Image 1: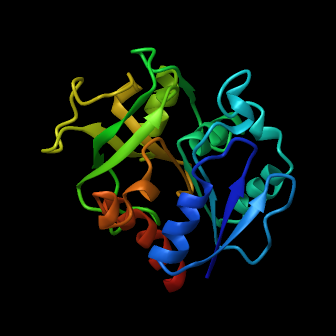
Image 2: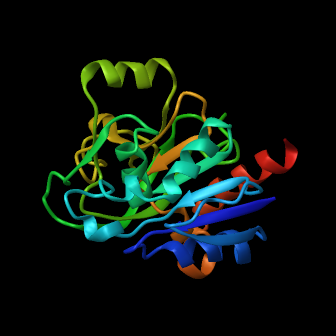
Image 3: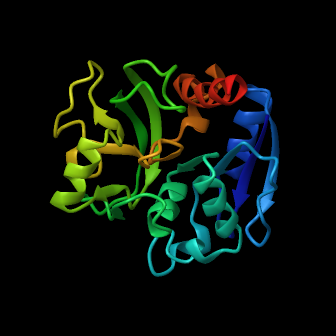
Length: 229
């Protein structure tokens, strides 16, 4: 299999994603400049964290128009796996590949710390090997996920909520919510389950040298899904 990491002006986690995929998980990974199309032989596309286009207007608002995003959309429609991490999540919602919007953190501060996540669904291509509770870092100023009441009900009814912020014991509480996200939402998938957007960074928690390897569970789940398909 083969993965691709999209590089936007302002991306700062692209090399982290490449390292986690290629050197930790052993997957051939190509860096794709935002002006280029994603190659047809790519099985997994990653939109990395960072500050694409300097977060002008709002995070992800300009990146959604990048030429590469047309091929990302086409790949998603064909069922290929797409993972948006942090700014990548913001780009996916701006491009309407995922529903909702990401607002400023309720504390109005940039947050950079480890959080605990409850794995709400363990039957997606990204989560079938992820434990019930994992720890990953966040690093964002606009991670406050919001959707209207009808949209939230649709997410719940369709099983699209994949990760929620929780405490170390898996309890989903207001105290465990770092940014004010509705229903403690930390990650969601599209209805087909092949597009995942999440604010925490699995690539920053992919090996013991980083202090935690919980993010590797997610990356390896996607890889196993693709190699078994």
